[in-house]
Image (cartoon, rainbow, N blue to C red):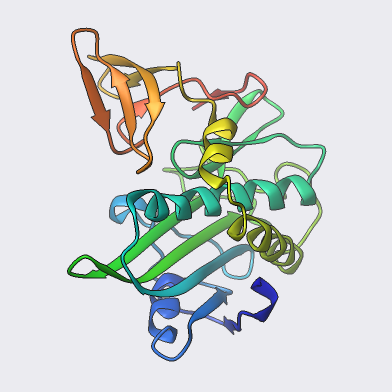
Length: 251
């Protein structure tokens, strides 16, 4: 159970994912939270930055020492995304949140635009085929009201949405939802159902090609119909699609 997992809080770390990984040398499972990350990262090496003390930066670390199936490995991004969505809905029940494939959590804003409020970065460490550790890094924008110019139009926080809460309350809600989702035996199916991406039309960001999603495969990748053949897509960073967040349009 999550309440039995030791929690480590730091004023500042380079990355809560890295801190969790280091702590797993002596622990089976840890949660690391920090007021600030100096070298926080997102998917594909992107920087995840934020104002000190205004957002939630945390990681769940699990020592594995076993062979994970493709579905087990993919399930952790489902656990992270669904747990964040659960927590946000509990904290801000009057707002609308949804998951963008594969593991960003979006919020429907008053202007009808769907913007990113949370990102999840899952890292598995291997020696050969054996998974050594799994780290689920989670960032949630809570009290920050201004963002760097490059993301100012696409990011949002609970404060901007009008939700009066603080980081500690969001952390408590997240721990509770992680506890539930870690024991969810239907986690992959619930993740598929939440995203509702099957049957959607994907358009590559260069606008030159588009596909129809046939199925989310067990490893979390997408089987798509490319017209004359089926293809498999492994990342959601290269395409756009309409997200079911009460009709909100993503920037």
